[in-house]
Length: 242
Image (cartoon, rainbow, N blue to C red; front, side, top):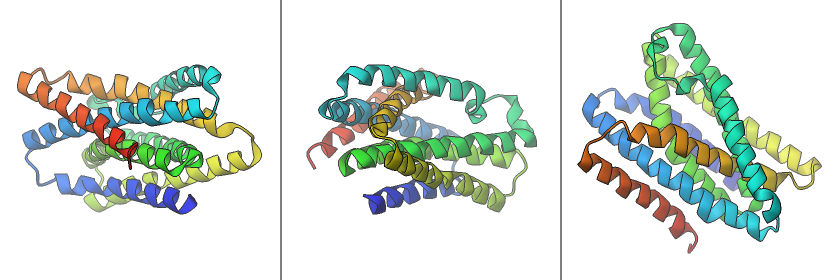
């Protein structure tokens, strides 16, 4: 289990290096591609929650507490985004170098929390772990590309932006170790972590990602977005049969 967990975190961390490949892509084509990636991420996050995380918690026999901790996860992510994850803001403050450093702090905390959630999922079983890792991976791709752009606009060189982005991604390992230590000393912590993760995924999909998709009112693009959301859900469904 530990090997699979750390391999999954390493692969997700390497996504932080994707930003450099976007420099030569036409801006309009990049925006359209990001919309489809975001749509895929929405489907994967929601599919992971309702097809893997919550059903596994029900099987574990903690159904009576699941709804409370899922709700707690939604509220927790609201608080974190309001006061910690500054990089979710997309306004003129991107022009300032100090905002780039704030972005790195927020991204590091975000990835640390991802590590905690991934460890909790793998502690339930490897299937749930992989499903959660795929959902996180698909969410990280558009986010890391955006973070790279923020750092470049803030005055970072290409090399420095890549290294800084990768360094913050590695905090996921710290988060995973924290979760593993807690699991060793605190009985029953894993279902709580997973339920909070489920709430966090619902919050991210519903408040960060779906509103981004609504910014493009084009009917053809909207249909493509729906198709990719369904593909994301379908991918999570396929994992149930593997």
